[in-house]
Length: 164
Image (cartoon, rainbow, N blue to C red; front, side, top):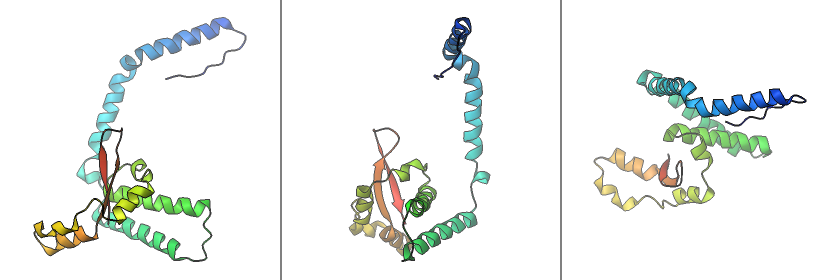
């Protein structure tokens, strides 16, 4: 927690501000630790409750909207691809990936073209292993899905990204 404070023409006030900021940095956890912990716990508990999750109908509407908007943009041969159009398409793709994969928005936004090509080429799925599935529905879903992996938070592990 670094802050720049400007106190002009008064060395005593500047020294007091420096002392206060130093003390605040030293005792920040003591003063705000319990409140920060309680805030995080409430946020985690409340946001993960089933009644807080969106309904199936809402998720389906979101899917239909994003797929329709992406399809319309890509089908429009007269669309001028400027920065705003491209950013709009990227936002739609990231929202779709975020919703489907239950990921934070930053993860799909960091997806590289190489990772996308791995998914397109089925580099991570062995399509010959479909005999292990119990029914045709599971087999069909497996055939339709695309999977790639990307670095997660930190550099020590990778997380799957599923395309459907």
